[in-house]
Image (cartoon, rainbow, N blue to C red; front, side, top):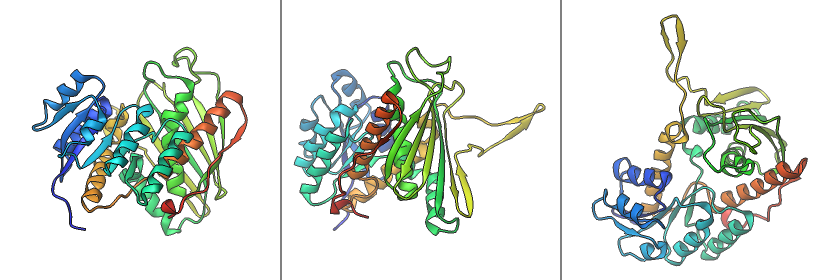
Length: 340
């Protein structure tokens, strides 16, 4: 298939993530331009569109997708709006980069899987951006060589300065640990079969009613055990780290020691303060990979099956958090379209 000319992209949702994608497409990504933006807040959509030549503002995603100058869609709206936007994109046969979550629950995610399966081909790349981070990609490549032997355990740490207003204990699972769920499946090539969530006495820094931090344990169908420390009110910075323990060695990423200074009797460096700073390069790589594949007429990267599998793990994690104990993950059989 001949490569398309410059890709016209509609960005649905112009909040923090959506606005950053608009900037990225216009200033960083090659082979694409933003031709439409969508937001339920008409004034916000107009404000974002005004900064991009030839960009139109909409409050209705379907109207934007029907535009002749829209070739592809980035969905960065809140999760509950994703299913309707995805199904509309399928009706218009538009390729999509959908920010996580694919949808907020496993049932709706499975409906999206089934809708795409009926098309007979993939149209969606899900935005699990850690797969595009240089350190995680290096770790994945190392594991694929087999030189360290079989992965036995994977340790993860995920820390935020402070949780946003309105956060709940369940959102630590659904909005933060969701990344470790995908990373576990991708790095190890295993499905997660069970989840156990443990929580100590909450930190004094945690807002009232939020169980923070939490320790989340995964069991996998490949026999590995995975732990995730999630601490969204650590107070000092944004940290994402992972260490895989294999039969013949270990490997660790995310130490953040790209530069260490020595001055005035002290040594040290800086700690990123949010996910956009820490994973800026990963987001750039992710969007460029999506644009390049779309222009070739292909869809690559995390699939709607990956989004569904993570949603199912999230549900098991929330049940464990609320009710205690180990909860098995309920997955349907993987359709042939998503077989490796």
